Amino acid sequence: MKLAVVGATGMVGKEILEVISERDIPIKDIFLVSSEKSLQKSIIFKGKSLKTISLEQLLSKKPDLALFAAGSEVSKMWAPTMAENGCKVIDNSSFWRMSSNHKLIIPEINGWQLKRDDMIIANPNCSTIQLLMVLAPLHKNLKIKRVIVSTYQAVSGSGKKAVEQLQNEEMNVEGKMAYPHNIYRNVIPHCDDFLNNGYTKEEMKITNETKKILDKNIDVVATAARVPVIGGHSESVNITFSNGFDLKKIKDILENTPGVKVLDNISKNVYPMPINSYKKNEVFVGRIRKDFTLDKTLNLWITADNLRKGAATNAVQIAEYLINKNIL
Image 1 (cartoon, rainbow, N blue to C red):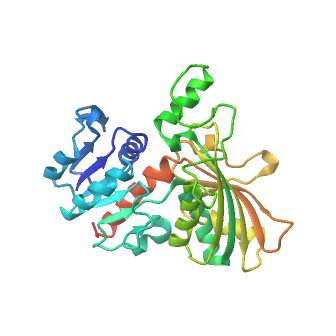
Image 2: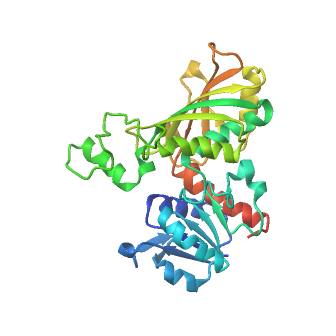
Image 3: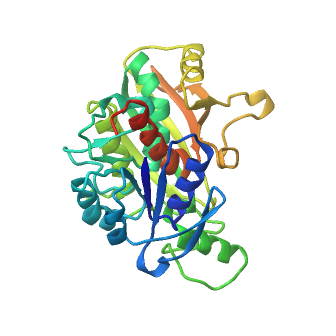
């Protein structure tokens, strides 16, 4: 297989290369694509130094599969061009996610939807992925009616500039601002742009993507906040079911869900934290408890590495699914 990574010098692109290097993927050739300002930059992959190329140059290489991590504008312009030239695209941007003609995939949940003629496949939002990895098995067994989620999102979700802002503020160094306020020793209840309904784009992504992937009848409302953590998103989740449940059944379901790890032993202070999820491909869940104010309702806490399962790992897993099902 000839594989391309578009946006190879960015945070997600670098993580994709790292995840690929850890996994047994049959690659004949790999092409690393960057923006003009990073052209011909050397990147080490599996011990070899590779030079980045442009998207125009990539077309002549005729890749079989391209993992895009270069933002919505690049995906809008170039994903169809690559697809028309016989290259499947797995896109990390938001551009194709809500298109009725394109599938939004978390392999463990709805990979079965993929067919050979799916040429552009959308990777969900990072917060949506970790949320649905926990919600999907619970919904299958107990039927979810409503979800209230508050996210505590790391600065790496905003890119390199945001990470640098936090680091500069920690060291009391002047620098460029990625956010409208300081992030060091602060929490900003503002992820992405505000919409006319008072919610942010990030919050509505969680609502709309959950409905598309899991069930259009689930009510989902989100509040997304940015926290002074480098990597790893956290979520406080309140779930109301149609059916009653006991906590043992909830834990049994989650403990037997591939890709989910239960960390829930409060007597020993064991619960998920962003620091535990760093460079991990799993989604971690804990603080599992009944909501004593509302019947058939559960509270829990989820963390995951937003650059891993929230982006790079999920994209690579989609690629693996295509290969394993022989539909590439």
